[in-house]
Image (cartoon, helix red, strand yellow):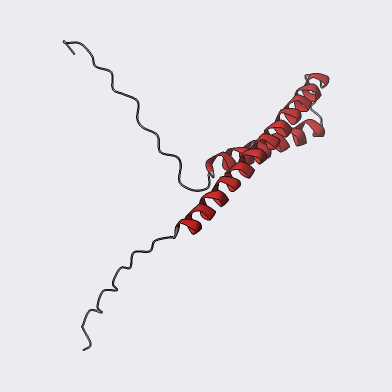
Length: 109
């Protein structure tokens, strides 16, 4: 038949066995731990670069900024963006948190 609709594929529920799930959870935790360590290291380097940038700006005069200062500012910007992206890229499903309890306000609203 030229105009027939193909039969729908049956949906198969896939379940992981406990060992696979534990291994996947462990890998997720390790990946997040590595990401967190990378963020710490990059943040330390960012702080060092920002300190160096401030020192370079303090040495320059009002009429002239050196090429070193401009390069240092670019380096700070690139590293800051890298840190920001790593902070967004959590691996796995975030832990479930319950919303804070609602405050009950006395009448009248």
